[in-house]
Amino acid sequence: MKEHIQLAWRNLWRNKRRTILTISSVFFAVFLALLMRSMQVGTYGSMINTVIKNTTGYIQIHAPGYWDDKTINNTFENSEELDETLLSTDNITSIIPRLESFALASSGDQTKGVAVIGTHPGIENKTTALEKKLIRGRYFNEGKDEILLAENLAKYLKVDTGDSIVLLSQGYHGVTAAGEFRVIGILHFTAPDMNNQLVYMRLEDAQYFYAAPNRLTSLSIMLDEPDNLAKTANTLISLLGNDYEIMTWKQMLKELMQGIQSDNISGLFMLGILYMVVAFGIFGTMLMMTMERKREFALLVSVGMQRFKLSRILFLETIFIAIIAIITGVIASIPLIWHFFKHPIRLTGEAAKAMTEFNAEPVMPFAFEWNIFLNQSIVVLILTFLAVIYPIVYVLRFNILKAFKGK
Image 1 (spheres, one colour):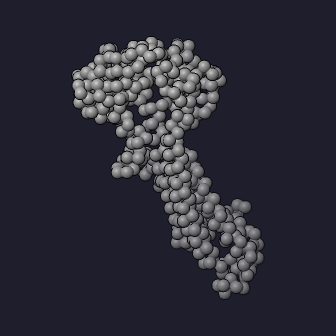
Image 2: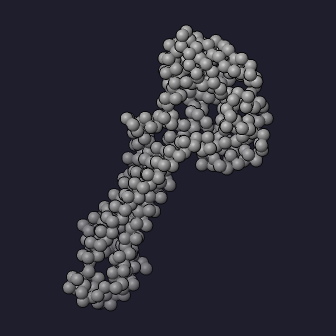
Image 3: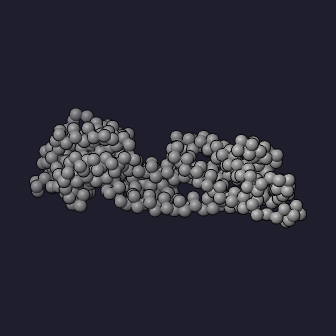
């Protein structure tokens, strides 16, 4: 076997031009496949992480039936015991308590329906970086009856920092909710829906406004390892039983999931087309190599080399070509993928509009994950092995006399 390996390696470099051409065809296959898949996976990951952090979290805990009937009456009472149970569960890094409802915002002659989010300022900012979305004003401090408004909502109501607005709504168990709040900051969101209607206030202010002391509509849970989402959700279900409604982001953000799945299918289809082009390119190179070496094969068999051994050497040559091409393809792609991983491509036009509708930043980052390099390398390696079937079959069946004549 060692002798066959040495012969295969020497055969590669007897005709350097042919070997470099063959390696190049596999190299570009690896290079292009890695770039395409890294772009797809990176875009999906960025979209999911952005939406999850800004909205639902990876898992949410509600009162039973809340998701189908989002009213202030479908709230649950928060407790230290519940918080301790959640934070002591493996893979959970933080929980965000929220009280969410709707209200009518009024300023002068302007009125508009708004979505009110009562949250813990410190936890919210640590998890979602809410303070970084400020374009004017300041973030929450210890003051009461302070709110942050989304940018377009502030424009519609014709208010700015320092102004006040009145909120009217229905509180817990039908209590009338009314209050005057001072605008301390203006927020900008990429999603138009959020930018048009969001109002943030301190959790204690929201609970007082809606007459729902110590009550929450949800606990949003952030995870250390998102890949273990299902396992963590099942653990919480077993711990909390039927007292709470436990939902993952995949259950809550079905439109996002469907959009990603649909785009992923089209992306895999494009990748499949690339693989077909690559496969034909590799096969064409192998076919050319076989035609050029007919007489060489005939000479080797005529002097006594067994066809099986010759086919083994040919297979080893292909392995060397594939390994060299894959390694160089991976090495060449790493700097480019790393660059776009750190400096994502910013989208414009319809592509940017489509992403902002899902509350995702309109950028196209690349994913820098080892499994992408491994998976694409394996696929190209398989394509190369399939392409070498023809030369092997030819060696096992060719006619020596015809091969000497170049037929």
